[in-house]
Length: 357
Image (cartoon, rainbow, N blue to C red):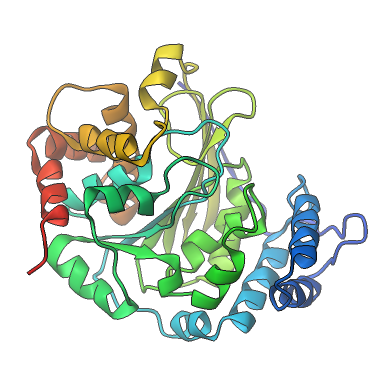
């Protein structure tokens, strides 16, 4: 495996790009107008604008900060939550993914969040239904019978009782979620920040999977708009020549941006390319039920498989991010593997699926 480490520069050049709004306030005003006009025509204008914005070199942390401000202007509930984040235990990690991948894997981040929680890391996991794939996290959890929290005040109790809280995005941003859902089936500016930013909890850090290579951009805007998240990781895997997934993979090239109090660093690790067998073993299945079964299999005790290894890598990233300077990634891998093989991970899943009294 070959790795390269660099440190990001403090700023990126802005670009208006073919007459697009070129500054934070312009983006805030333009997006605000689109959010307030829920018509077929405005949705098409929104998509065209975003297609231009996400071209390489156009987005900056400042422009994405303008996006965030427009969302806060539009959704007073989110603005209130952002101003007063929900208190959660020290070491809690927000786990989220951008979705909209080229190669569709099974619901890896859902299984990894459960495994990390079973290993002792408190996790707040953002969930939604499917957008561009067969099954979103919410679809799989519904099949398994795992409840999501119905309002923000339930999150501390869920963390105290089971170590993990699954939170649908409308819990924090009901107006924005209702307006945004169904508009996009491809990566857009919101994909770089909203899955983490909208989880308004006073967490210690985040692990965010982004199906785009601009991991440093995402990490830097999250530092701007969520400065209370003192540690975080944005990860992307390029399986083969631009085939991006929003996960930490042991095949292909993995890009990681790490946000720490001193700044953001970016690393790239090149591994062997994915085999046809690996692809078949980890690929998303054609029904919610089969994808839910994949999550169960990945958490079950037993021998290593491509599915268990993929989940363990992502769970270890969560654990190591929660314990900076105390737990190395190799140590976290050993820990989560022992938790899975011992049966504690599948035990937590059984607890989550047990009927509430």
